[in-house]
Length: 178
Image (tube, rainbow, N blue to C red):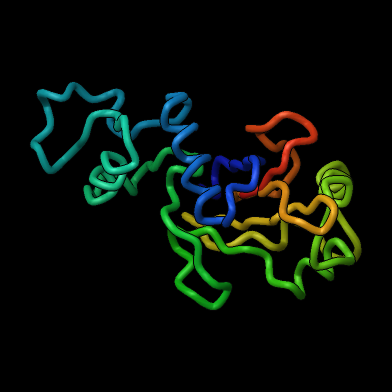
């Protein structure tokens, strides 16, 4: 992550954690990700040196235990595995924007889809560039998008939110994970 940039916008699944898992399942099933061992003949690897493309989050978790995974990663949301507070260990994690960051960027603690889209188009909302909110390598940020005062979408990613990969149709509740 970091070098490639990724972001997703999906229906809110009750929590950022549940939405993260749902987006990861969809990306995993799509097969649209880099796999560190795709270009290596499996017969040239010892059992602890590589893994086949996973078909489940459990298979992905097992592959992440192999040191070589972290040389490349998948360049997608599959490279993170948990949601943490802003003051926690952010490596391999999604960190939600804090209330202070939401207010500085969007002028509200509950940004609407219009607020969020406006920020994505301009790359700048209020006095704070969204790109300055990115975390460490192998991490991402998330924003819950609200509709009528309730969480509707979530967006997450490791890049400035400029080209969300929609996993929802317009008007559905969602979360943005970058």
